[in-house]
Amino acid sequence: MSHSLPTLCGSIMGSPFSLSAKIHNAAYAALGLDYTFVCFGVDDPVAAVTAIRTLGVRGMNVSMPYKTAVIPHLDAIDESARAIGAVNTINNLDGVLTGYNTDCLGAVRALQEITGLNNKRIAVIGAGGAARAVVYGCLQARAQVAVFNRSPARGMALAEDLGAHWGGSIEAFDARAFDIVINATSVGFKQPDSNPLDGRLASHLIVMDVAFMPVHTALLRQAKTLGCRTVTGTRMLVHQACRQIELYTGHEAPIDIMEHAMLQEIRRLKL
Ligand SMILES: NC(=O)c1ccc[n+]([C@@H]2O[C@H](COP(=O)([O-])OP(=O)(O)OC[C@H]3O[C@@H](n4cnc5c(N)ncnc54)[C@H](OP(=O)(O)O)[C@@H]3O)[C@@H](O)[C@H]2O)c1
Image 1 (cartoon, protein in one colour):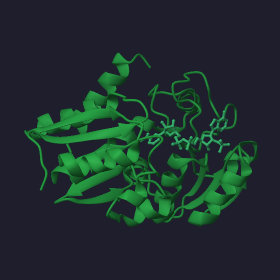
Image 2 (cartoon, protein in one colour; image 1 turned 90 degrees about the vertical axis):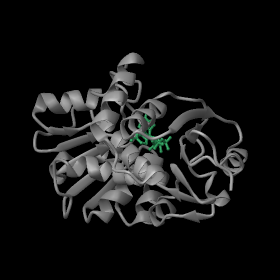
Image 3 (cartoon, rainbow, N blue to C red; image 1 turned 180 degrees about the vertical axis):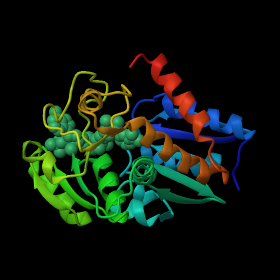
């Protein structure tokens, strides 16, 4: 069976982005493993999956825009990835490629660091791939979830698929009806001054942003000013990466070292 020296892991996406390599390589070094992680910008995700098999790549992260396209080309799909309809992690175990979605676990683990989720009333803003993972994870943790989205058809479809409540447009969000609000839109990502809920928060809310660059988005800065408890997108990102490390290496992930490497790289990228 194909394999490499050192053990190769990587990511495929439209254009290569350094963050995953910094996080994973920091983890491998801390664990003392002879592993290397490389980011690949690729045009053909199907050929990339074939390359995983041909080269014996041990684990491959999958980023935009290929999280759905790879699914028919894998040997097995984990239940959460199947329900979400997106794979962000391909685990190659003895030549069998299994697709996972670690974003949902990352979101739930990040939230559970500050609150239980059972019966919590959660508003999720957005209906793209990240929102699907967040909604699925929160429902699995027995929260009550309402979806709000700019495009109604996409929001309604997500709510119906996963068994959440359709809340309506983003303007329909009323802070008084919720304990937690999560921005799962792309608004705020590399947009330090964009806040999808500007003026709509209240101090009782726990506010989470999936956007992770900058770390302290305009939404989270406004939430902090009001006295809200907050969860950063970087915390979700590092937790989902921890699950990938567990899958690719079988070891417990060194989360503090991974988070340090991630924040250092975000600072280097100046956002
Ligand atoms: N922290 C993490 O670990 C993590 C993991 C995965 C993704 N992310 C982040 O999550 C974000 C979303 O990614 P995705 O894959 O879900 O993207 P996506 O599939 O393209 O979905 C984008 C979502 O944002 C909404 N949106 C975009 N521009 C908007 C605007 N100007 N006003 C209102 N809504 C707007 C879209 O609404 P419409 O449906 O109306 O177009 C849609 O709901 C990205 O910033 C990504 O980096 C973070």
